[in-house]
Image (tube, rainbow, N blue to C red; front, side, top):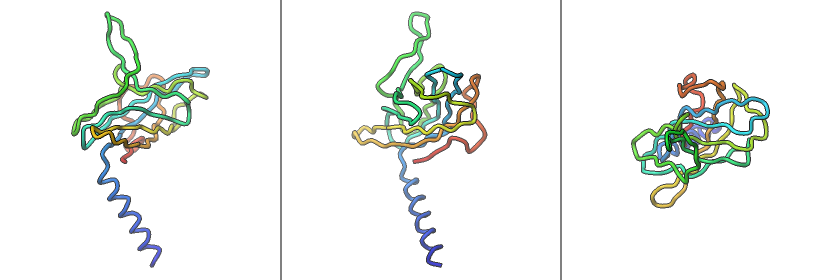
Length: 158
């Protein structure tokens, strides 16, 4: 009986912690690579209770992870690193192909469809406080679009 009470107490504490979470990340996914390919993108939907910004990311599959933007410049689509992506309170920000995204560079190995890749996303509030959200991103086919995978995959609240 003590075991059940202890387990319930832990579960209640976890639920309370998630209720106070400032950032929620959903539908996280990464585009699969071909052999020898050294870079790919990570995409997701981000919601925040307070104004925040995505300032950095990391992953054990690569030493280099950057926040990027695709944008038209002189009638040419160009990709560039950005210092942050704003996430306004109460508005969903979608990181997707052709827009803002997270780039995984210098990959140590091929990422294959069906794999799960851990990502640590760092958000910074207007007060300068940082929050790290751990996400498990599903790897989708090379030709994957921004459509969500089956419900429940890649979702995480922190």
